[in-house]
Every structure is written in C-alpha cells, then in structure tokens.
Amino acid sequence: MDIGILPEFRNPTQWAIPIEEVYREGIEKAVLAERLGFDHFWTSEHHFAVDSWSPSLLTILAAAAARTTRIRLGTFIIILPFHQPWRVAEDAASVDLISGGRLDLGVGPGWDLNEFESLGIPLKQRRPRMHEGLEALRRLFTEERVTLDGKYYQFSNMTLTPKPLQKPHPPLWVAAVGEQATRQAARLGYNLMGAGSEYGQKIYDEALREAGRNPEDYKIAQLRIAYVAKTRRQAWDEAEPHVHYGLNYFYTRFKAMADRFTQQSTLPEVPPVGKLRDTPGLSFFGARVTVGTPDEVTEEILRYKKGTRITHMVLMELPGIAAEKNNRNLELFAKEVMPHIR
Image (spheres, helix red, strand yellow):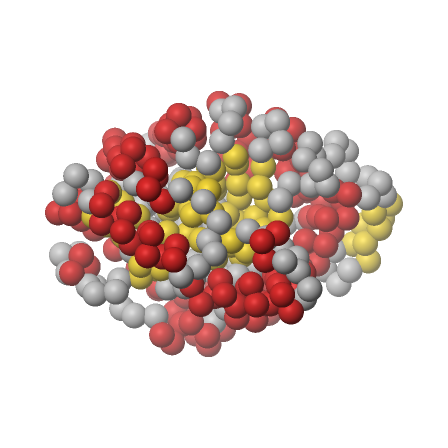
C-alpha cells in the first residue's frame, strides 16, 4: 500500500502564523516525508477560504519537485470545473518534467457552494464540466493536434507543448463519494479518489467489472485522519481541537448544500472539544478518525485494509497544528506504524 501525506497549506485564525511560514513549512514537509519513506506528497485546492486554503496546487508541487528526488507528487484534487483544461494540461506537463515524471493528476468536480457562486458557475454543471475537461486533458496529452467543440470548452487545432514525461500521461484520478459518481469514474476508466467507506470502494470494483475492466489495473486512494503520539491522551490532547476544526469545516459546508448531496441529511453534529475523543464511531465520511498510540492506529488501519482494496492511503494534515507536533507525528507514524501496514 502506498502511503502519502496531504498538507493543506491552511492558516486558521486561532492558530495563525505568517502565511509565508505556512508555505515554507509545507514545502519542508515534502522533504521530511521523502526522508521518512512516505510514497506521496499530495495537495488540495480551495478558493476564497478564510483560512487561506491553498488555491494553486501545481505551483506548490513545482516547488516541492525542486526540493525532492523520489517521492511522488499529486493533486487531491484540482477542481477542474474552475479551470481551462489546456491550462491545467500545460502546468501539469511542466510539473511532470520538473519532477522527472513523478506527478499524479487527480481532479474533482468541487462541492463548496460559496466557490461556485463566487465564480458564477451553476452547481449542476460541476460534473459535466469536469468530465468534459478530463476528456480534453486526455486528448491534449496524447494527440498531436486537438480541436474541441464542447458544451463548456472550445478550442481549435491546439498542440500541447511540451508533453509530459510520463507516457501516455501522468496517472489520472477522479474524486467521487456517491454511488453514481463512483460508478461513472469506473465506467470511464479513471483511478478513484475518495473519503468514503469500504462500501464505496466495492461499488467501484463492481462497476469496473461491469465495464469489462480488471480492478487490479486501477487504484483507489482514500483520505484518512490519523494522528499518533506515545500515549492516547497525548495524541488527543494535541489533535482534538484541530480534528474538531477540520470536521466542522466539512460538515458545515456539506450541510449548506441542502439536498444537492445525498450525504448531507445523515451528517452528524460535531461534538465539542473535550467530548470528541470519547465519541464512538467518530468518522470522516465513512472512514474512522484514528487518533492514539502507534499500536491503536496500526490496529485500526489493518482492520480497514481487510475490508477493502485500498491501494493509496492519504493522511490528511490536521489544519492549524504546529509544525513541530505534526512532524513528530509523521516521524512516529513512519517508524512504528508504516512498517506494519504497508
């Protein structure tokens, strides 16, 4: 199993530091992750966020590429409906070349209502725009000249230069949580990115077989919240405020989507700090929040692996946590958890 980290380059007000330090520390995490033996350094995208969530993924990965030599670099995810596909293709090809062919290109449709309203893009266009953009990316990466007369994107006689180093192109991933979106990703032959339960991963494999595809040829990456320390109490003392902030951020915004997401009606209220650690079955969209000792975290991840075909585990950085605490967590995870779960 491939194990990666996902710093979000966020700066929540209650733990704010100079924003340039957020970026410096974030790039240093790529260097640390490579030294510790992690396989991937992922980034994520949001816009106009009060906590400065990183809006420019490929710029960050270019900087990380210049500081590393082995670790793979990935987008989890680019919100493709917000971008011209030819621009994404050019930037992705550049990062792939700078990194020596280490880029994984993950895209998604987006879900934050505020972003779509700010950009004037109807929410109902999110998935059609994404899939039209994905087809454009594939063609730009592999064809000499591309003309596209789509519903959302149009260009004529376009040649992507330079092409990516990886052939035919960097691995393409699609984010999906709901059953319909998961089946569509499988039917079209994309690797799956999610934050869901084992059930969603089984739906993906089932849809791959129905489309005449071999599941072993496709990868599944899942987000996990995991934090380790020498004792369970220390782990929760350090992590709990940041776990609360992260869960509340997602749940509040998903509920704001009203009935546009089927998940929204089942999302629970986030317990307050002090009670969060004692909440049975605490999960992040179907995957248990795992905070504790190395043995406790190892046990939970091994349980999770038994019920799924996960190929890539992506550890989300807790928003706002101090770099020294997070780095200590990564070092302990790499030393005492990673050898047992890989």
